[in-house]
Amino acid sequence: MAAALHMLDASGRTRVVEVSSLHRTPPWGKVDQPDFLNVTAEVATTLAPLELLELCLELERRLKRVRIERWGPRLIDIDVLLLGNSNVSDVGLEIPHPRMLDRAFVMVPLAEIAPDLVLAGKSAAEWAAELDSAGIERLDSGRNWWRDLGE
Image 1: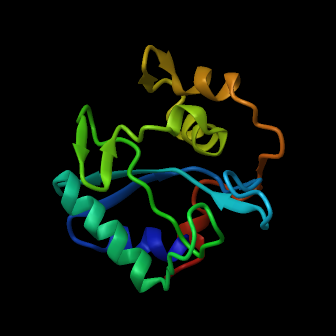
Image 2: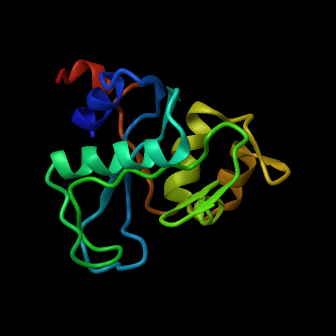
């Protein structure tokens, strides 16, 4: 994840503004696999939505992501959750992410960096508090963990 964040930050058209702590989370969807690590990041960008998606997919390829099965084990998974106030529905991209409000592994780290962000009438903190966050563990990583790891 640190490598992906460094690559995003160095792309020239994106800049990592803030990153949540690392969170160890139980697998979702396909549960017979090891826990995941999740973070959310605020990224400033001049890219259009589909350009941002393509950059994220390129970073996944560079980091050796292999897509074998839906919700299966993977080295990296970069999702675009929001892009300002944009609403996008295109092949392979929906913004806001259509299932983010149902997923504690998304909302808990998002609420850490943007607790007052209003989504569908409630703050990120309110959404996170209402979801089942059993098994989610905030790792004592601090917000600059990814910078500390270098490239």
